[in-house]
Length: 377
Image (cartoon, rainbow, N blue to C red; front, top):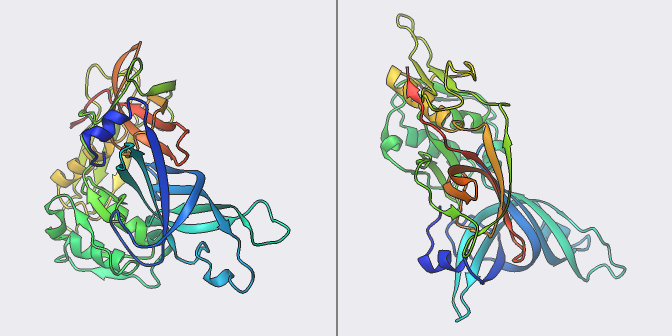
């Protein structure tokens, strides 16, 4: 969860005034105070998904003037590289507003449903945007790039990201950035797929955060809730729907490396081995493994780490909940939350989140329940 004040969180449990603003930026910027042109927000939302290649997408309707033919190429809202930085916050009513950044989104398209007779009046313009990972995905390599065994993870990620965003500074949450690859590898064409494989092999996730910064980090511990979604006095839960399904569920992961000429490939296995788990490996649920392979997995320990990290993202998946709640716009995908209903108290991990940009609209989220820990075999 993004860092906010205790006063901000307290305000969400009572009557409060929510505010939204958006800023169009024309140069690479990061942080929460970019220089740019403010636009009038009418409605929209930010959608965040833990498992999507593009983690965040924007649907924003603003009041704007549709340009004539001569102005179209230089229009601030044209999809030629400009971005929108979006914020939502709480107005405390004493002249103080606490803003929470929702990220930088490249403008992908702009449309106006109603064409007015005089052509240039202020009218609703609907914008669609994607977070900065879209640029990484688009920028496929024109020729393969080879990285030596002595190159570090930090050097490789910085080079591949920096070719798209020269001013970007990649942040690692631990010392992985200074660890050498240990094996020569080649990025053939798909820049994003290579980077994702690079971090998956070390049990990490890679995305652009709300500050617009590329980060490589370990997902938060699923057993330490950062927010409580509950009913009753001071509660924030409005409604929920539940589903139990085995579709897409894996209760084991086998991670392997590439074999050298004279040695067997590294191999690690993680399974749901909790006797109390409904998806226990070898129980009534059965044995449903996922297989993952990467040339960057060099040792059995690395293979076990990768397998356990991949398994941890899906444990408990059969039971999911769709929440409708008072917006806590500091939440992010993979954040664990405590869900309290008359049926009980459960810990869930957020998989998808829809943050409304209209103050009167609720927030929706899709979660999975945390039910078990996986073990190595």
